[in-house]
Image 1 (cartoon, helix red, strand yellow):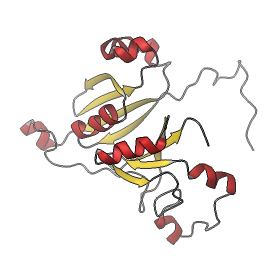
Image 2: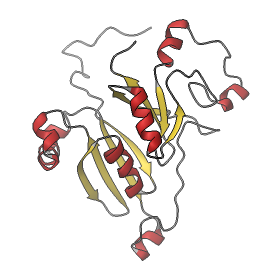
Image 3: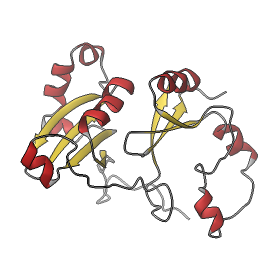
Image 4: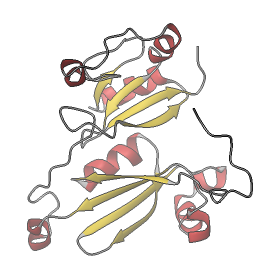
Length: 204
């Protein structure tokens, strides 16, 4: 079913999955979620005309964790940026009203999360955390929408949406092994409705 691992001579040798990009509608709100609540750090911000681009990542060294400016300076170098994994690109496409008023949030360009209704495609971002239960509780206290807490089974959103079930998705039960794993996962929504999966770094 799957091809053998590529040889060092393969044209894909050296390829990396470097980043994901999400459209966002309110940078202040979204940066609060990913930076303040989820602990990511800003690598760089670029105003490129009709939109503003924010690159985020997690510092991997003690020095970078204690000095966000050094982390940003070192990581934003192209030769480092392109070798770094797990980056998140947030792009705010401004409205004409925002350009005219200079006020963030004027007007509205709607985005879909890709994980509900008839707009399925993208499903979630996955973050590994030391303790899913404590993370969910902390985020709940911060007003974050909790989709699934630990110990809970499937619901109308994950792993299969109610919409999919209504339109012919399989109703087969989760396998025992995956069901056990699924119970240890948490799911939340970011400010634009994108699903975020919380995965324990140590499985029970």
